[in-house]
Length: 145
Image (cartoon, rainbow, N blue to C red; front, top):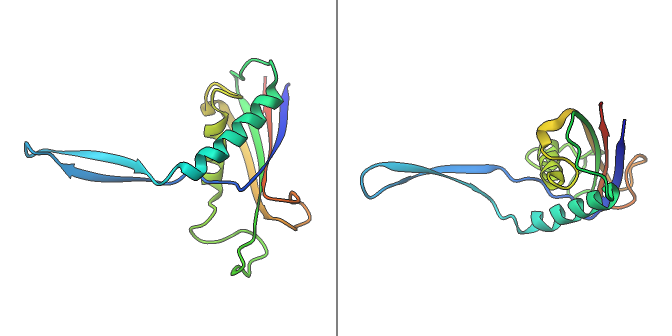
C-alpha cells in the first residue's frame, strides 16, 4: 500500500455547476450548449493543488489502480454566518470541492478519478480544533492493492 499526503494553502475553490441551454439553428433545428461559469478563480486553485500533488509524488508513476481518497477543507467563515460548521445552503458544496480537487489530480497523481473507489471528506472553518490554521485542503490518497 502506497500513500501520498499533501496540504495546499489557499482559498479552496469549487468545481462550478454546468448550465445547459438550447440554441435554435438557422435551418430550423436546435443544438444544446453546455457551459460552466467563470473558471478564472478555479484555474489558480487547480494549479496549486496540481503542484502540491506533483511535489508529493516526486518521481513515482501515476497511480493506476483502485484508490482511497481523504480530504479536509478549511474555509474562512463568512461574517454573516452564525453556523459553527460550513453547512450553508448553496455555498461550498462538499461534492463541488471534491470535484475541483479530483480534476486537479488527473494526470498529476492518478490517470483518472474513476480509480477512486472509496472517498471521505469534511469541511471546517479556520479556528476550529481540527482545522488547518488557514484556508486550504489536506489530502491523503492511498492505493488499495
